[in-house]
Image (tube, rainbow, N blue to C red; front, side, top):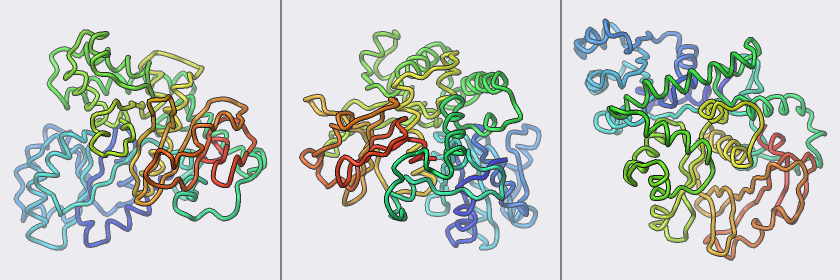
Length: 415
């Protein structure tokens, strides 16, 4: 088993006055059920996927829920939305009952939650494993904050080491990093008890299950072929700008269909849609976005590919890792990328209320000041100062280009 960074936060949320109903959502197979069943052993586990028992649970009154199941975990609750009404009624009538609702479909679950449980629940999104989590060897092995997480929480003490090779956790960080770049971050493929072929087979089956179950939950498709074509297109072009008109022409589908399908990928936690930064917040909504696949192992399964990374795949892997780590510590930031008319690009911006962090990502094993050129003088474009800018790569040497622009190995920084 692997420990999760969410563990302590979930325990704290659950005992708070706002944690009587916890809603955990995220992609299928990210470990939601395993996590809450371990953290809350005194809660009764109820699988809503069981069609025989589903109607029985739906017919329970609020009084019966309070008496029979005062504490319960309801898995795949979006399969029977009526249960959410029952939980709401129980919540409103008594102070003691506590419930944890799990679901893998953000669209179906969140729609019902917004309708019925607004102001009554705490929502937690669970993502595939991060590099600090991949380093753990069991539930009792603590998840140590990465340098990135320490940096953005202002907890980092001193400067970064002059070389990744001097990191005392070099081997564990590198091992987790190499695994992540080959198989991604799903818990099922993280262990050493399966072969590379078995991990690849699991990922292939995951993609098939996603199409057969999650996508059909999101929309009643009569024909999956257009969606499969877009899935493959996005995998081939991960981290590229999306142009719905151009994609539609290539795939033979309408612009609105492309836009709707991309939204499905985002809502089912398969992709991160990164908006283009603009000083005008309204323009961010209409400018071309970048779509990053959430998991590199899934990309390779979609493409039936083994070995070797493209620069775009590497960029998506690092952007996704930063995104997951930020989400796991509830970082209050907005995510975007920068592209100007004169060709200046920054792969990722983390926007706080008063400043930014900027990131450029290169797969190269050696980088220089030239590779960081787009990170300099960003204040001339942005509306707030840049606190620090990082060039992340596979170069083990740490380089300080100025007082706030740093080149550092991605595994050293994120592991």
